[in-house]
Amino acid sequence: KLKHKDIVKATQAAKGAVSQWINGGNKPSADYVAALANVLKVNEKWLLEGELDDDVMPYADKIKKIPLLSLEQTVTWSDSIMNNNHWIETSSNTNKSCFAVQIKGDSMVTNGSGISLPEGAFLVIDPKYKVSSGLIVAAHLPNYDAIIIKKLMIDGPNIYLVSINPNYKPIQIDSLNCIIGVGIRIELDLV
Image 1 (cartoon, rainbow, N blue to C red):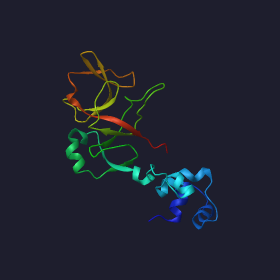
Image 2: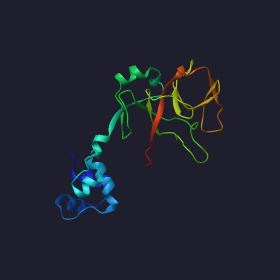
Image 3: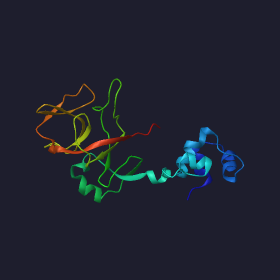
């Protein structure tokens, strides 16, 4: 059950301001609308106007929980999902096969611009997404105790798993059979 103090904590607004919002004395200023909508699990339009467009789903309906697996658990991901106790929330368009892993190491961090998967970020993986060159993939290679996260590059008959960080060498693979899913979203807490 949501309490007054939960709203204060989530929005970082003064207790008096939150009391005014709750009692209808004042509307929240623009500085607080996004955080307030998030904690109430509604969208900003509903919060400000009390109505939704017919084609807009409430914010809470867009949030889904997916299993958070370790890189080691994902080797047997279908079994791990069934026995999993750790979950993350995502607004990504996911299916029941999706799961998340937490990035370890710096092999997928860029030194410049472009996509980067820093250590600690969560990568949502979709095992049903069509695999193609240029996508971030989760792969299980023979003799590895855990999956690896790499960018898939197909160059004619040659298939490579490539780190974004140029300090790591590409790994050549024989087929796409080792690919267990495609990374579809990054979730990252900044604080």
